[in-house]
Image 1 (cartoon, rainbow, N blue to C red):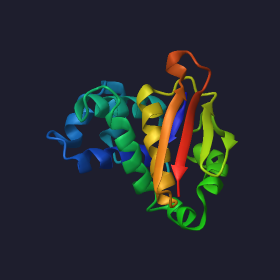
Image 2 (cartoon, rainbow, N blue to C red):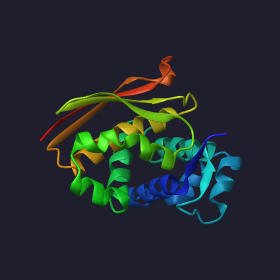
Image 3 (tube, rainbow, N blue to C red):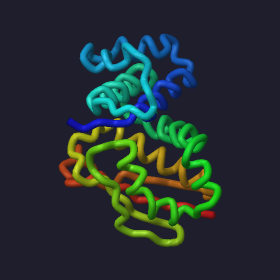
Length: 186
């Protein structure tokens, strides 16, 4: 059973609070299936591992309740989460490292947040790259879409003037990986 760190779920809940959803976090949690919502019955610890199914349900509820259920809000959540992450460990990295250097270390960071699958860099140039999440067929559609925004947010924090990330392969379209094409300008 895949697991995620509590920091991912806490970041998603902070997004709901920031978005000033009319029913707030309670409304989003109420829209989740009971087994997944039970994870949120006690305070989430950033460093603890939680069932991926709870994270999947949380993202789906945010997409439906705060967004329109069409995944359009997920990259926005991703960019927000990147800014949230940058207040921690990524802050030092984003100040000291270039976009290519950050991408080269991304595989290490993936395993610190998700215990299933791996991020691998398939191609890297001065202004572009291709990365993929492999061995994670359970990744939710919302998580896939959110990651595009998260990668953009990290690129912008690392000094890019523009950053654009496109999901070009998806496990939800029958591909064996979730693949992201990245372009940025400095």
